[in-house]
Image 1 (tube, rainbow, N blue to C red):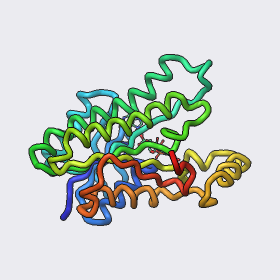
Image 2 (image 1 turned 60 degrees about the horizontal axis):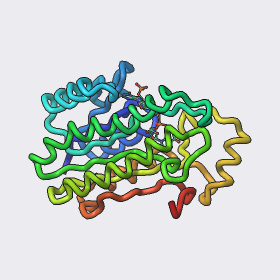
Image 3 (image 1 turned 45 degrees about the horizontal axis):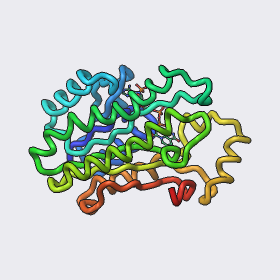
Image 4 (image 1 turned 180 degrees about the vertical axis):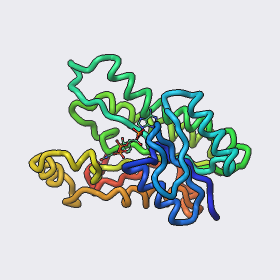
Length: 234
Ligand code: NDP
């Protein structure tokens, strides 16, 4: 059954791969962007997830154009890495405000309509770093770990209403971000990953579409790693 799907940050990177995967299976997909416009063939809406009014307006747009959002993929995220001693409070708060509070704003706005429909899927894109940690990533890791507690609390609140909330935790993905890493750093990363390679964004998208499917109705509060075994046990 086709669903209405909103992917934050679906205009590029992993979010775009996720949006295309939903579109390919026949769902009605909307991606958010911050002024870049929507990629070819996808419906776009401007939205800054650090602003609750902007999130509200984006949902209202989707509702008026195609109907209530049934599947939310909270994918938009940023990094601002530096060592703890050098990290300013502003740097910490900015990353938390986008990655964690941004996901909260989106989930909160979506949940009212999901409750009414007695069906919904909330999928949060975390990172292996959330539970594994990363030097220079105190802000990012805290934000990504926070998503786990959030998804599990939502599961406890809304579980009886056919609403699931899950976390996908990608490892190192082949994106523009990793393309620019020096070859030596890439080799180090690949050595640490049991699978011996980076993942494609499509491999992350496959986990997300699965969690959104009817087959995943009994999976909630889960953390699904897509990391080639890098973070196992965490
Ligand atoms: P990109 O940097 O390629 O894209 C980030 C996306 O987030 C863009 O669409 C960007 O929009 C959007 N975004 C950032 N801030 C905001 C905001 N305030 N409001 C709305 N949208 C915003 O990231 P990736 O595709 O690499 O990563 C996607 C997600 O996956 C992130 O949450 C990231 O933490 C996570 N992840 C990535 C990994 C990787 O290896 N790349 C590994 C593990 C997790 P705009 O185009 O307007 O800037």
